[in-house]
Image (tube, rainbow, N blue to C red; front, side, top):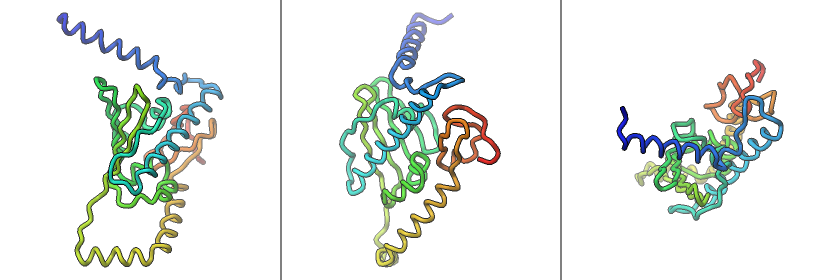
Length: 219
């Protein structure tokens, strides 16, 4: 028999669950047979989330501190980062008491999972070890901080960097070319709703992430 304290805790959990189900974050959700309007809205939410993440990362390109708070609609945030838990890009944690989401993106590979390899290479972020996104769910504002991997200043490393700089133009061309090829190889398009699945973690999906349709053999 649960105690009065346990009953009160269960009640609070259910109230929080119902509140989240009725929030704007669920506006992009749909049933087993989504309408064209629901699919369009889901695609728009995801595309807007990717665009806003690129803006956050671009503002951090030359900065060592957290970016300024940027408006980030809750449906777009959830469409891009998903619910709390482990993901192909990293992890998403929620502090319910403070109404804060904390997203940890695992370097370049994690960014590629979210926006694709080609767009990641165009950002030219450098040696990224991790990206931390802090999101205020009530104000719908996001901040990003790029944590860069440390490089030692040995003569060998300094020489390697000077060589890389002198060959920068050709190297960037090769990187962009490779990124585009990898981006193409790791993508597949749903034949039902035309949603494009980008990123290595989605390459082997057997069903569409957006509408749930079974993946055809030639996609």
